[in-house]
Amino acid sequence: MKHVFRKYIGDLFLTRRFYILCAVLAMLFLFRFFIPAISIFPWLFLSALLTLIGTEYFLLFFSYKGNITGVRICPARFSNGDENKISITLNNHYTFALYARIIDEIPEQFQKRDLNFHLKIPGGKTGTIYYSLRPVKRGEYFFGKVRVYVMTPLRMIQRRFMVAEDQMVKVYPSYSQLRKYQLMAVTSRWDAAGIRKRRQLGHSMEFEQIKEYVPGDDYRTVNWKATARKGNLMVNNYIEEKSQQIYCIIDKGRVMEMPFEGLSLLDYAVNASLVLLNVALNKQDKAGILTFSDQIGTFLPADRKNSQMQAVLETLYHQKTRFLESDFEKLYVNIRRHITQRSLLVLFTNFETVSGLKRQLPYLQKVAKYHLLLIVFFENTELKQLTEDKPEDIEGVYTQVIAEKFMYEKKLIVKELQQYGILTLLTAPENVTVKTLNKYLELKARQAI
Image (cartoon, rainbow, N blue to C red; front, side, top):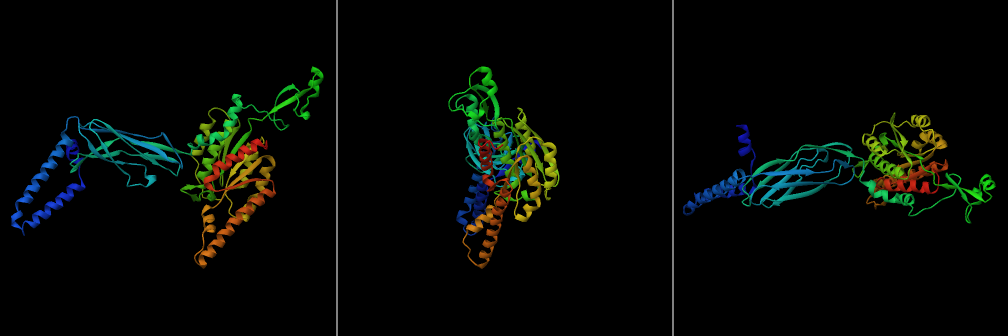
């Protein structure tokens, strides 16, 4: 009984046109008391209205094979901070065209309650709608059903269908940027394929072979022992050193919770780390991760095995901000204990004042003694906008002066770090990925690692 009620009554909904026509009918019955000559018209109107409703009800609920089926198609995982495309395909099993209003129960994290789509589906055909969602937090997102309300061209009543299944989608760091930024490292693949074979000489590079001297070779690479054995001038040949260790160190302290364009600084750092480590693996380097706040978080040892990129993705997926001050002393101790080979350490953090930097500077100096340290921190783009706006009153002038002071502090921090030989990169959050990647490629080209 409950199933019958649900099928024939529970899925019945009235349209706006129905309520408008009912309002007109009520007005006609009201006017008939004042104008007896039109007393027949309300009854004729009521008969026509009931006929239309009955006809549409019969078409929607009792048509042979009358049904709507459908499926939601979306990626198995979403890319954080990027637009992710979703489609809903509906199959109209009725023999006549239907007008559909579609409501997708999207995850609550998006806070969208007005996501409606309208679609006309010919009889016996399919129709598809497309839309996109941009998540700004990593984690698990749950989709519900797709509610489809269909009506005939009469548009008096609607029948509801529930299609598609409940679905869970994980939001990972911005992996969709990997293909975009991989092009910047395509040269290394060309070298490997022989399209652009280039040998660079230098004592800091990896030994490849001993070969016979040709004009243009660096005389400093002459191998005198091999020359004596062969009777010809022989030189050592070097190639760009591979399998160097690249670590992304991510600060998860409270300074990284600051949001810009919907994403926190931690999310920007996570996205940049994903792209950087992917390119490093493509360049035959070893990629690793270290996270910290008041305690040491995750440590993924540098490696370049086939499964390392998936390990990087899973490691970054779980990172969350801890609302405490980061302990750089513990970071230094952990680096000395676990990262024994000289490596490129890309530290994503944020300093707002010189005094805040000076508290941590001794530990950063110690790290820089044993490794090539690159500190990436962030411009406050909202403060930058304040400095560029024209103040309208005295309060605006004061606000602008304070904003300029904080912007100047950032420049002082850069100079302070450079005085101690520590590489720095000050960037807007939205540019951190491409600028960090460019810096890595620059350091590789300079053989600084």
